[in-house]
Amino acid sequence: MATAGHVDHGKSTLVRALTGMEPDRWAEERRRGMTIDLGFAWTTLPGLPEPVAFVDVPGHERFVTQMLAGVGPVPATMFVVAADSGWMPQSTEHLDALDALGVRDGLLVVTRSDLADPELARDEALEHLGESSLGRLPAVCVSGATGFGLDSLRSALVDLVGGLPAPDVDADVRLWVDRAFTVRGAGTVVTGTLGAGTIQVGDELALGSRVVGVRGLQALGETVDPVRAVARVALNLRGIGLDEIGRGDALTTPGRWLRSDVIDVRVGPPRGHMVAVDLPRQVMLHVGSAAVAARVRPLSRSDAPDSDETRTVRLTLREPLPLRPGDHALLRDPGAHRVLGGVTVLDVRPPSLRRRGAARLRAGELAATEGAPDALGELARRRLMKRDDLVALGASVPSDVPAAAGWLVDPSWLSSLADRLVAAVARHTEEQPLDAGLPAKAAAQALDLPEPRLLDLVLAEPGASSLVAAGGRIRPRDAGGLPDGVRAAVAAVRADLAEAPFAAPEAHRLAELGLRTRELGAAVKAGALLKVGDGIYLGPDAVEVAVARLADLPSPFTLSEARQALGTTRRVAVPLLEYLARQGRTRRDDEGRHALR
Image 1 (cartoon, rainbow, N blue to C red):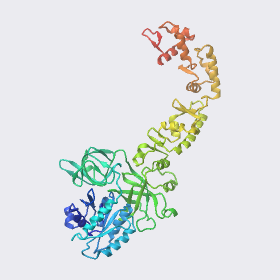
Image 2: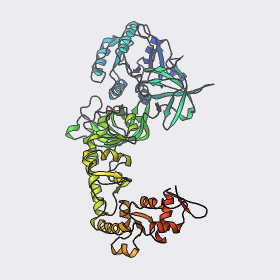
Image 3: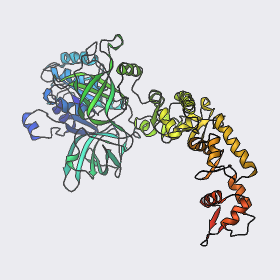
Image 4: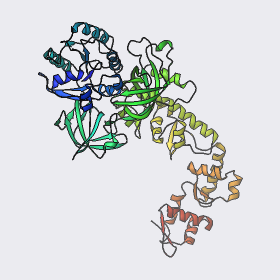
């Protein structure tokens, strides 16, 4: 758990009294008697199977960023108020931060009870806490100097820890780094609070686009393997230098988190405000141990009737972060150094807003979104997404969702796609009647589908039952494939071929029938004619008829013998034999003679 409270109210003294450890790591801190960076200490408590670790945070207003880095990843707080000082300005700022981050578990500790009556400070603090997400906390009055009340504090800590929600040790790892240093002979070491998941030696973790290995593990000074949440953990990393990692970075399970620099969020008002404050254009986003500059684009107006308490905004981050819907963060004003409100992440892959009125429409879409990962809800909003992206959002993939080529499709959207596909095919047929169907790639583009293989899902819809896919094209199921005029001309050609199947029509005959290059190409695609060479068109069964006649010849046979058996001219026989060879039906020997295979 993290300490919280005004500077010089005895947070470090209290941690030192509880643990016997010095949380102030720097000589400058001990010389000045003031914590300026995060400190760490731990102790065992009777009745608890695991030690309790403390992140001791600075109380001075100049070090709020460090304080937020310590508070962000932890599940509970020990809020400290001095009996001889009472509630102070940094008490308010720390409480604002805890409230914005949605921290709900904690304990009020009134220190320096040997210097003043603690009841007044306790009652005042409880009133302030009661107006926050923490609510009216249990309170203990102590003196770090005399030891008064420490046993009661230990008992209260046992009760607090025992009532915390059980961590999900099977969850995907996201470890926010709060310290990074080197150890001679070991290399780079980082520390952080593991809030969920399990890490073991040999694991690989993602740091941005790269992957690093876990060489060793420690928890509270002891070598462990594995380490399970919730825990303070130190990782000895392989394959990375100290200058490549630091506070605010996150180590994650590879392939299970989306890193985004554009996110849609819901912003609540700061504690004590009935309505949302005006957000500056530039803010600082604090999440985990990270503090990242962000640019604000409002999606809903702060003065709209339905946004008195919350509003949605788009944040463009200076650098991408591994986030999921439902994550809690806070916004601070980098100029006035004040908390602007808590943030709930709603979408880490939001759509672009290019059209007029798109922001208002987007705000309406997000109005009913709670932020928790929901597979069907995400698909309903996005209509189409990669399976890996849905998993990276922390959602489970339903088994009955239509899927193809690594993509998932909202079932309710498929019927609309089927109607659009029917219309696209009809439009193509009208505009290009000689084209034997709409190419699959063009069909996918018409439906805004990223992958033509998704068309199989659309064609399976009842609304697309009038269509059929063949040869990489989609055409009407009941269409003859050719316009009436072309079909009649082809019928005339085939009537000519009925008596002499290898008497391919001359160019003038084809022109007389109106069969030009495009019409002939359409007839070939439709399977109504067979093209065996330039200008040589035969019936679709010409290959089988030719093979049957050539089988009666002695093998091997000459071109002249083949020509006579087929009852045709050299103009047809030469390209026909070449066609049969390409089809693997005949072979040619060194003397230029032919034989059936």
